Amino acid sequence: MSETIHVACNIDANYVKYCGVMLISLFENNKESTFDIHIAADTLPQEQVEVLESIIASYQNEVHFTLIVAT
Image 1 (cartoon, rainbow, N blue to C red):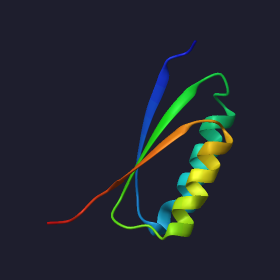
Image 2: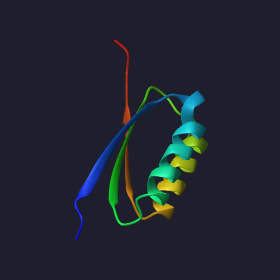
Image 3: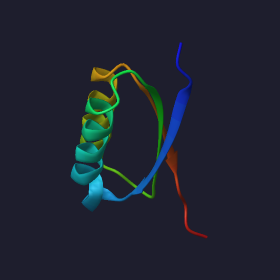
């Protein structure tokens, strides 16, 4: 059993497609690994959240979203 690898991505709505491409490349080139993806963003439209969730779930990995609030 392999160890889970944690990957953090800090994105905004303009970077979702690039994050998706990076994740697909990561998963395709490391099929024997398990990943726990942490995505930090200030706001993301629900449809963009769903796209990332779908990509990550299709490779049987976990995702956690963290809302970043400026103070």
